[in-house]
Image: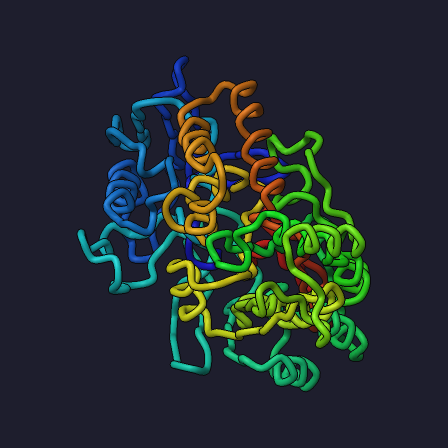
Length: 469
């Protein structure tokens, strides 16, 4: 968000204009018209106009990475109907097309000069329309951004922002203390313990977002040999004491989650069939019914085989992933389930879950504007749930319902389908929501007086920093 901007944005619970000042659909929801701002220029001097937007959207449609964003994949035609008007034609309506345009790390506008048709790997340049320009990169040390003096909106206060790479949490806090850095942003870099330590340092203040970022979610692989029985998966759900995560690891900042979506997410305000409140007796009973008997070692067995499973963790994604994994391991041990934790680098973890090579893993759910559609839409093709659901009864009906919800904008029909999809997923204990994560910021109060979190709090918006001067 320093360099790039989106056509639309999600703010205060609704989609609003951004680079596109306003937008409208035709009566049957198949033609979207975007009216663009007329005072915007890319950092390289290229004009931001309808032809530039058309080039971006058509390039994205050929990129396999956009295969789950229906606002891109469903496009039949993109037209620059005049210099500042873009018309997108779809073959059918879909209630979430506008939400897809709000992704601040995916659906951004780049200069047409750096688009290389068919090349989705090579970075041709870092050129957007945002408040800062890309100035300098020193590998392994920092990236420097300079204020965009030609920015169309309110000019940013700071002349430059230097993003330093300090991978170790302790070193980051020390750098903040010594004044080497002025700010640390985001729950991926700060645990709540880090946050408490930081704000205890003289001259350092902090803020935690009021709004939840997303749900912490643990996905169970129903195609894994020892997790194919739904009673075992349900037992795991009952054996997890979410309050220990909320009150202990999250210092009470995170509330317990019952759905894999933040509170306030559209189409999620309904009663669930099952609420897996912490119940060790229920967990033990289900494991007994599934034929897993408690062994002398404290680990359940069936036919001489121990109930041993793995929890695969991308330790770099979130500061709390490993502490939560360790806590869950101890909780499941109390009902006779032996858990081995496997910590992996992000791409190794990504490859493993795409291949279905896991028993349990932490799966990042989506933000309020991207839920629940961006959570379910990829499930039929490219998420850990894809392989998992192949062993669950009536899975084809589940996948067909995902297709159905992507082809309607009728609110009643959308609500009915999500009632089914969410209950199906949770009833079968494919996903176990844990808590609702928060994002946070700590900063040097001599330079910064505050910060306002956006509709997706994990994305840093430089325009929301309040100067102390």
